[in-house]
Image (cartoon, rainbow, N blue to C red; front, side, top):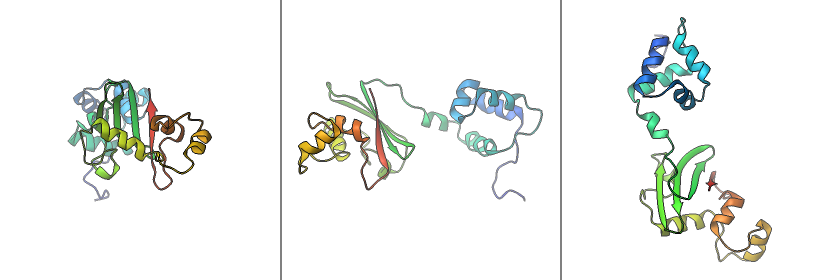
Length: 181
């Protein structure tokens, strides 16, 4: 056996089309999910030649677990503020917040609690959220706090304003936060 894995070596145009339809995706949606052009999906679905490459492995995975696509889909933004907790370029947790109403909703994109914004806590309170924010910036009790705030051009201690300037990056880790308003 040439291949060391229980994965076929190539696909047909029909294989691609059947999988895409089984997943309930248009060609455009399927292309966005796979990070390829719509033209690539069209070419695959009309190809007379065997299709090879990384798509074969991904096909095998999606054939066995077609719901995986839904696990990666970003939820619609329902609240006023969205924080995306990242590890390098991987989305770990989406945090939607309404600070006036003190409402927090999260969605984790990793099973590893060490990589989640709130660890094993899947229903954080607003107080948990505030604690998380402070953990991603310097403490209120920092020596020469006013100098640090001035350096960042932040008028007063506000973790969101600080995180907007620093991306919540800490020297000792690779986590960071992207804020969308």
